[in-house]
Amino acid sequence: MTDALHVILDDTAMVAAGSGNILASRLIHRAHATQGWFLYAPTCALVEADRTRRGTAEHIVALPGVIVLDLDLSSALAVARDAVWAPAHVECAARPTPERPDGAVVATVSPEQWKRRPVRILDLNP
Image (tube, rainbow, N blue to C red; front, side, top):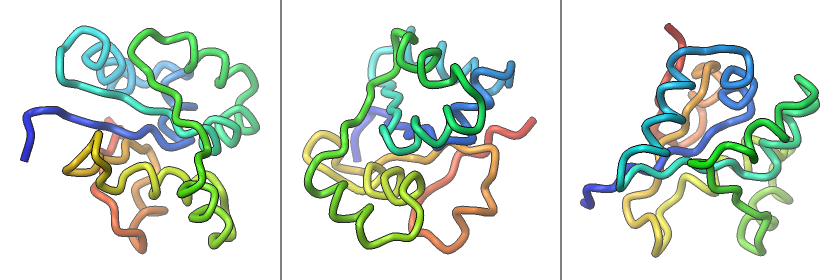
C-alpha cells in the first residue's frame, strides 16, 4: 500500500465540479495543492460529461490538478466489451497499474451506478 491517493472522476463528478459541488471543488483543490494526491479524467467520461453539460470538458481539462487519461489499447479493449463507454473507461482506469499499484477510487455523485462494478467509491453527495 502506498501513501498516494489516486482518484478517478466519473462523468457525474465532472458535471458536479462545474456546477458548484463543494465536495468536488475541495477534491480538485486538494489534488492540486497536496503532494501525492492525483486526480484523473478518463476521456470517455469527459465526453459524456460534456454531453450532459456543455463546457464541462473545457472546464475540467483547464484545472491544474487534473490528469486526462487517453483511451489507450487496454482501455479501448475494456470499452469495446461494455455497452456504455464512460463507466467502462472509468472502471478500467481505476484498476491497479504500475503507476497506481493500489488502483484508484472513483469519485461520483451517482454511487448507485457503480454497485455492480468492482470499484471503490468516493461519494461526492453532501
